[in-house]
Amino acid sequence: MQKSVILLDGPIGVGKTSLGQAAASALGYGFIDGDDHSVPGDWLRSILQTSRRIVLASEQALQTHEAVIVSYPLRCTNWIFYQQTFARMGIACRTIGLIADIASISARDRMLSKGEITRSAEMIAQGYGQRRFSDIIFRTDEAGFDETCQQLTERIRQILNCC
Image 1 (cartoon, rainbow, N blue to C red):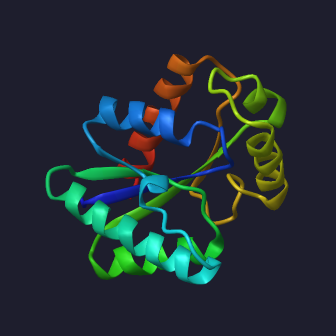
Image 2: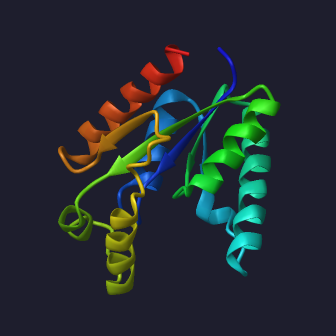
């Protein structure tokens, strides 16, 4: 199998990190929380530095894993950067958009601040998790965590086996 990166896009609280970690563990893949590589500063410089750090972390993870799952909300600029950068490296890059309604996000076990809930609602309105560039759109609010994780894991297997 070709080395692969799976990008999980979506708003705050949709499950990018918790589901991504669980799916990576179930599949034997590496996992990267993009927030761990976030660089503060003005938007353009920050997003470019953060994206470069995520690519480096992905390269490292791919030295010991056939694939890596990256949780990070994506703008189109991020997606283009990742697609082109990974393609030049011979690494397949797929995107899964994670979506849920704001009521479900607000009711999850992870306690979000009012500011995070407001920002999550804004991100939903801006299309995070529902981008045209996503290979699939996956709802995280239709089942419990374990079932959702099993379904996501199966979808990841499907998109990596089809290409």
